[in-house]
Length: 316
Image 1 (cartoon, helix red, strand yellow):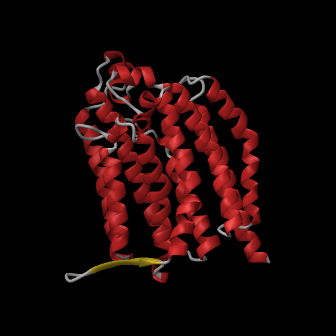
Image 2 (cartoon, one colour):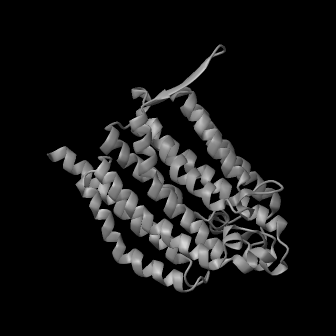
């Protein structure tokens, strides 16, 4: 297998969807919780990336095995198109998952049981998103699971790793009892700050399912747009995108953010015409990229707003 084939198998170009929750969580934990452990954070990053690549490889592998269309199987799916040996693909998947498991267990030993619980929940959703007799991606829940797992899961784990010593979120466990304790205010702030990430990540899945609706029906994949109808699914796409700005504004009023976060609204210069273009027509080769560009534009501005907040806190 060549390097290019491997990158196609794991769809390395799509990893921005997991990079942004990680990056924004690092900035948010510094601006809001004022706590940062760079060693554990960097170690987690490599484990997170490995698991993200593994789930994408599983997705391509299961699509290849379950494809009803020979054209899709051998002309569009990377495994069939590149004639990749199935055994090699399976070995790569297990290797990536194994590395991610080592990272997760090591960090859980260092920081506490709660990390293991959160990590296992994310891994369960990640694996069964495309694996099993009824994968989550083939149900009208793909947008929910992708948004929550990546937008909240990665975000929450990154924050936990940087605040575990403050016990803002903590789980005690022994043979006689267990207890999960923490700060309600901190938990609410963390969840609220992750809402724009959940929305923009879910929108990528929604845009993908809208663009592939006819092909998915042919391959017996009945996703959310199938049940909502195209018109309502497009409306949902717009609601998710623009509600992200509402979450930022409410967070500013509630004191979760400080005034530099308003720079996020500069992304509307790009987001508005891109959202309008996708609303007009949902074509994979032509407008699907608008959902990715929206994610990049919004979350880059979000990250910039938090970075400037951090600098403003340092110099004031």
